[in-house]
Image (tube, rainbow, N blue to C red; front, top):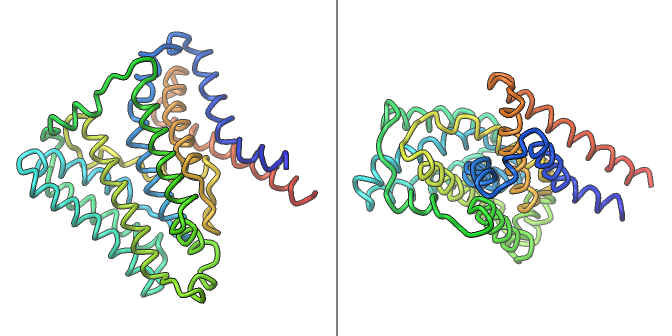
Length: 308
């Protein structure tokens, strides 16, 4: 029981360790302004991580979420800014397209890694066609939303907690959440019980698309202009965030709260590495090392559980 609790607490311990190390290296970050500055991009990363989590829940993997977030950024900075109705319609079409991809993967029994890898080039190509070079403008309401100042606790922390709690309630405590996780844990039993795997995958992929749209809009509100390549690293961040948060690639085993904590850890790790004056070229490798360490600790705890 203690080992199980330790395994569940690992994402939070990882966040606490990275936060403590950051405060030690740069004590001035131990303030409202410092935390707000370090975590300002945590919200779009957390939303992209949640999007990835929905796909991983059904035992798939999405390698296109980064370019998709970049595409949403371009749509928001151009179509949504110039013609809100047309921009909103395009975003809805993109969410529906995500659902169609889920249906295609299921009906044709295609590997999600291959399909979404190809799809990443499609999203990037459309983004470049819409906005060949960085530019455009974020809608005023979006900039105002992402620039909200909340007393005592920085807005990114509050937003991340709200996102995690809402998704946790929907996925872990609702009846349909049980069905969705069952689609990853035991799809044959789910089918025998009369539930449609096709509909479940479509819903989960559409939810991934919805949170991908939210991630792109949140990122646009922070950067104030669109860029097709602005979220290229989000694919790796989202996968790492889910895994850091206790998720697994098979069995429908995910944790919304853990995924958000994993996203916060990655955002803080980026700032920590900057304070250590590590070159940006090496930062991805250093963040990968953090992920490996956490996975190694989880493996040790799981091994201890099995041994008992």
